Length: 138
Image 1 (cartoon, helix red, strand yellow):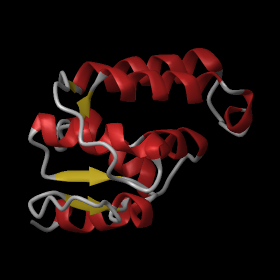
Image 2 (cartoon, one colour):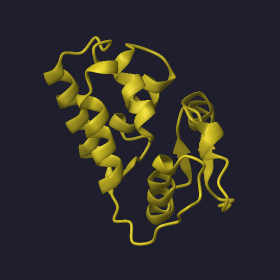
Image 3 (cartoon, one colour):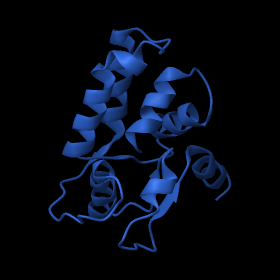
């Protein structure tokens, strides 16, 4: 699950981002976490903008993050597929998915993540809405 999905879930009390996070916390979706993604989550969560829009207090956001981390499978990335994506900052997400054997990356930035130079046909790049549609009706 891309950082933008998690952050959007913290900014809104409902919607597809929140439902995707809920699926992870309830165990019906199995998120991966790696060092680069973890640091990205932490960095964005510490920024005053956009976090001032969150209905959650800082300690509640931290508790939610820790709960999310507790259900993540930690993956070490040993091989880098760079350069691949148009935005260098997105490459770590693809690398984590490949290293962890993921079948899906859930992101609000599908346009950029789908435009890689290398193709991984078994890896789906889905928005939270697309993920939930498939996830609820396999």
